[in-house]
Each structure stands twice: as structure tokens, then as C-alpha cells.
Amino acid sequence: MSKLNLEIAENLEFESGDIAVIIKQDGTVGKIIMPNMDAEVRTSEGYKSMLEVVEVLQPGSKEEFIKHAEKVKGSIH
View (tube, rainbow, N blue to C red):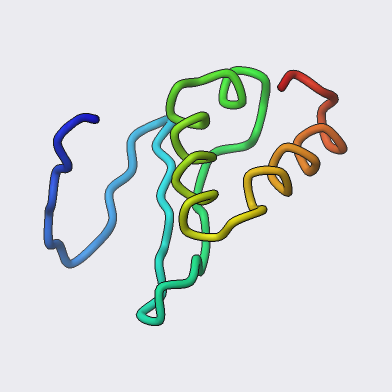
């Protein structure tokens, strides 16, 4: 696992392809901010890592993402 880069900032700065998982104070997943789920994103290492993270935080959510992506764009998983 790579080292986490902790930054405390007044605003959010995203680069193309970034994915953010917002975790609420009670530990639940609040939001997931990401670019459109096109084929390039859905086959990226970042997307695969995000699926693993949200599955740990909220079991069953990985499958929900996969089903949603298949419904919108067709299966690639």
C-alpha cells in the first residue's frame, strides 16, 4: 500500500481522474466524488482501489457500484 498524503486545506483541489471518498464523522460513507464513470475510469487502478475502500467502509457497496456502472454503460467488470 502506498503512503497516504495528508493535507489540511481550506479548499479541495482535484486533478483529472481523482476520486474522493467522503467519510462522515460517524464512520459511514457520505459521498464519493469522481469523474464520469466511462470505460477509462472503470478500468483504472484508482477506480479498483476506490471499490476496495468503499467495500471495507460499507460492505455491499462495491457490488452496488458495479451494478450501477453496468446499468449505465454495460459490463466491463
